Length: 361
Image (cartoon, rainbow, N blue to C red; front, side):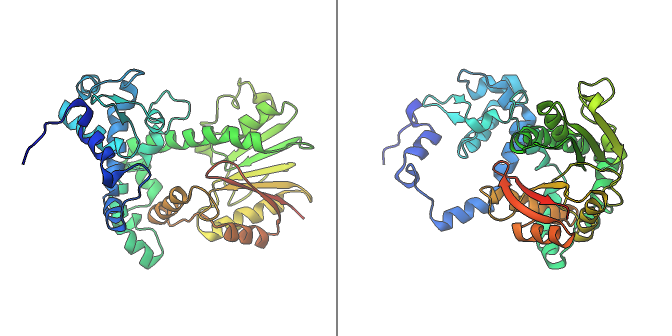
């Protein structure tokens, strides 16, 4: 048999992509697809490694070899090339015919300076504790409850803040990234005609509220969240900030009380605790609001959405870490109706969020 050494045009990735078995648009057979899925941890680990090494930040606008990138990220060239080869299989980076690497649309999202960066979200989804709870998913499915306390000896948030400071910082940055990126989508979607006051319930640092107030100069707003959360509110909302004269910051727990009356109440991505907490929060909104007040509830759905793989994965992770759950359209409408809200139209916010328009009777 004659052997042929790879030329620049026949690098392993290029050869694989040009083979009949991996032709453009061809789907792997079920047996290979299942093998690939069972090795899904390798993909997640590769994304995490690239993010931690800063490979996307090191790669500029011109092609670079693995050796050149290795110098920039303090890594060994051969293992880095293996990492990049694996990532290229998923469309994260691309390899040129002469064996150098260039950005893809996804690899740019791992850059810290990209306006749509997912670097911290990628790190959060692959934090060390995740590798200990995912293998226990069958236990969580059997019991219907979180496996976190049994695995780590304490609740999820206690563990983060007491034992995993770096992971807590990643969590905060990931949540901030997600909130900032979706805030403008929410502001673009919502029509505030006739609204003079809005309250963001459980609104975190207030990115959605800030985006709405920037777009609607006549509107006043209130940010309600736990004391430790609102203490880190968006600088635009705090004393001296550009929007501070139109904002009230109220420390509190929406599951206990909502001491604010407004024309519009926004609840975004917080109704994923246990059912009782969700019901209490919605009842508190109805109790606090005047008749006819508008309530917009924004959530990820695990049905009727183009991002099912993403939202169902988040749903399972919620089961593992806090025993929570993402909603179906039906389950969310049911909770809102039980609380006494009149549910109206449902609008997609983006690929992974839906907004439910409601009124207080």
